[in-house]
Each structure stands twice: as C-alpha cells, then as structure tokens.
Length: 113
Image (cartoon, rainbow, N blue to C red; front, side, top):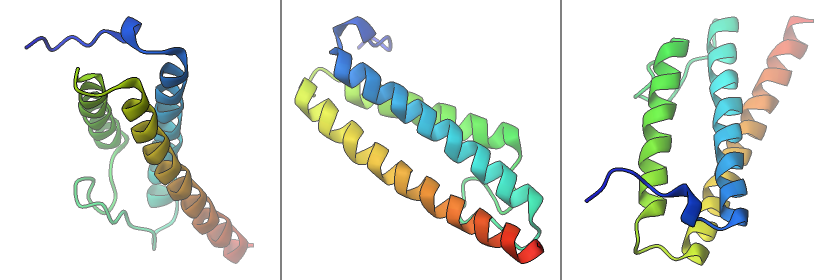
C-alpha cells in the first residue's frame, strides 16, 4: 500500500473543501493558542493538547490529524461524493468550534473592558 495520495485524482470541489478544512484548522489552532495563553482562566479541554498547549504541540497535532484525515479520504474505497460529504461534515463541525471559540474570546474581552 502506498503512503502517497494522489491529489490529482480529486475533483475540484473536494480539493477546495479540503483547502477550506486546512484554513479552518489554522483558525482553530490560532484561537486555541491565543485564548489559552492570553487569558489565565481559559484552559484547553482536549486532553491531547494539555491545558495550556504550546504552538508547537498544536501544530504537530493538527498536522498529524490532517494527514490521517487526508489519507482516509484518499482511500480508493471513498467515492468523490463520500469525500465531499465527509469534508462538509468536518468543515461544519470546525466552523461551529470556531464560532464558539470566537464567542468565548469576545466575552472575555468584554469582561476586561
């Protein structure tokens, strides 16, 4: 089994959805690092990261999980429609997490003012 996935075989809409997934991961990583390191009462609840994760740890975990997700999607058993559905679900979840984190950040900043 090859560990190299063939990006060229993906259709354009799934490529864009995966790029969106990467962007959402970057936003989530930034929020996680910023909120946990800027506000003392804020802790990360994901046990893989730890309560006050370093940027390096966040990037490492995001990189590994993104790679695993990409490999799973690129599996020959996944049709393009399966990939698309999976990407839409995961992106929706990430968007919800980002909105939730943004809400927490706004509330904390309002309390400081």
